[in-house]
Image (tube, rainbow, N blue to C red; front, side, top):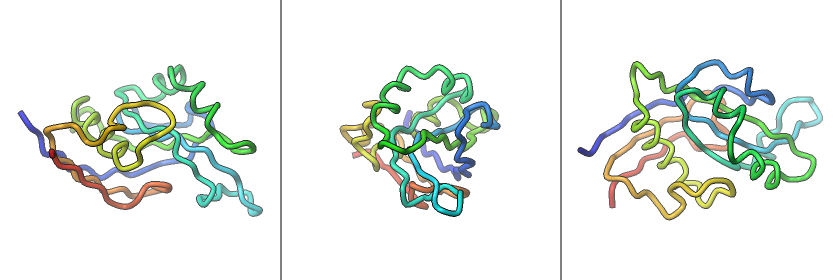
Length: 147
């Protein structure tokens, strides 16, 4: 049965340490970034390396199978950073998170790490995503529909 998922992702971060992420179930992005002369993260330097989902984000990110890929693909002199947007389990299940993950990955394909949805949006589900908070390098809105 096809789903129609509408979600607002309120991005938190960037975090240098995954232990600083608050929340469990949601969408995460891995970016490489540099600090500006003011000591703050310069969003113009952000490079998106990966987008994923998990029901236990801190645990997943602390021992992720693609960590070597992130390290190999980050530009020299940049730092690996994590952003997280909650999709609480009381409101969304794993299928909902996978639909959102696929839509975001499709719009940023090909990402250097991970292959899910690098061929395009391949689901029978519709999704509308609004990004708020510290969403850079993502745009404000995305949508995906079955072909």
